[in-house]
Length: 66
Image 1: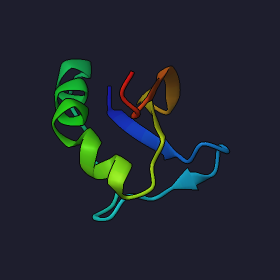
Image 2: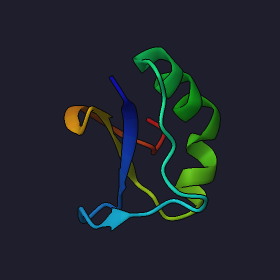
Image 3: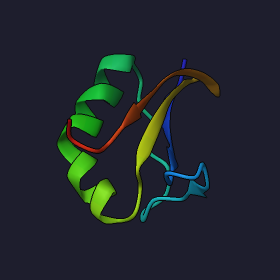
Image 4: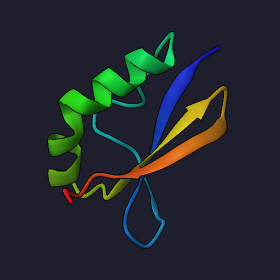
């Protein structure tokens, strides 16, 4: 299984992050990574992230606090 994040703006436009897409061996690795990098992603114009398992959406999260 490969875990990745898909990034979107508030209107649903897909955003390619600087440096390309990261791949993770497990869900916990992906969640730890987003926990460490969400502020930089938000500053780069990304509003929400969708966790994907082998390309299938698992859940969507807002990068905005609150």
